[in-house]
Structure formats: structure tokens, C-alpha cells
Figure 1 (tube, helix red, strand yellow):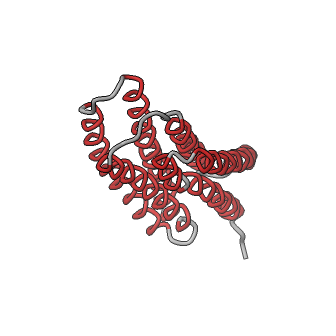
Figure 2 (cartoon, helix red, strand yellow):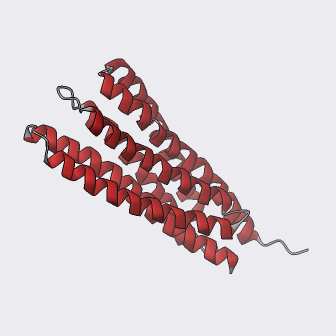
Figure 3 (tube, rainbow, N blue to C red):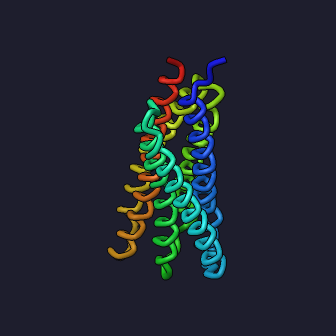
Length: 216
């Protein structure tokens, strides 16, 4: 029996990438309780959640570095560059999650009305949805490349939906009677979340390329 060492190596790398996306999704999911803590002005809870997000981001960074080391010595791995692109792109999502939390925490003397709260919840939930869908595509790529490709296409749909709600909430923010500093911070939070979803879309493109090659 002939063992395809490249396939075995690729499988190991993809399984480590699954650990990587788990950490990133954990960080992104923490934005939901963080947003509620911010609405309530609960500084202690915000600090606790930021620590969780930062820890998950650090753990994801460690996994990323280990993955890059693994890939750097896998010179014969056909999809090495695509796998590297997936790791590096996905890793950026955790940075956006952490950045969003810190930006929100800096907004201390202003709180949104109920309608805007719902808009912000929608943004955060859409961000979580995009990363969950990306996670699903990465988790299925080893056993079912066709299903992984379809899940990656779903990330694109979430990205298009995010574009719509981002434009709507941006318009709402411009119509608010607030000072420029607050407006700039809010726009930064909204843009950060959209960037996270855009990055999930780029990672999904990498998944799609890997899946197509595996279907070969």
C-alpha cells in the first residue's frame, strides 16, 4: 500500500487550522456579551470579557506561528501557499474582535437609544454568523470538500448582507446629534466589524481554493 505523505501532512495542518479557528470564533462570540455590558455601563464585566478576548487572540497567535513553522518545512506540500493564506487571513479576524471591544470600551459618556442598540446587536450577530460559517467550512474540508466549498459560498452571502446593514447603520450614525469624537469612534466600531466579515470572506476564498484542489 502506498501512503500519500503530502495528503497526510495536509490533513494534519488542516486539523491544526481547526484549532486556530476555534480560538478566533471564541473571541468573536465574546463581542455579544461585551456589547450588552457596554450598554449597561458595566466596566468590570467589560474588563473581564476583554481579558477573555485577548487570551483567545494570544492563543490563536501561538497556533498560527506553530502552523507557519509546520508549513515552512513542508516544501513538497502542493497547497502550502493556500494554507498559509488561510491561516494568515483568518488570524486577522481576532485582531478585529479585540479592536472592536477596545473601541467600544472607550465610549464611556454616551449610550445609544434602543433602535440603535438593535442595529449594533445585528452587526455583532452577523459578524459571529460569518465566522461560524467560516468555521463550518474549515471543519468539513478534510472529510467533505464539496460541503466545505458550499459553506465557503455561504460566507460570501453573509458578507453581502453585512454590506447592506453597514451602509444603513452608517447613515443612521451620520444623522445622530452627537459630537465628532463620539461619531468617529462609533464609525470605527462599525467599520471594524465590517472588516472582520470582509476578512472572513477572504478566508472563505482560500477555503474554496483548497476545497476545489482536493476535489481535483
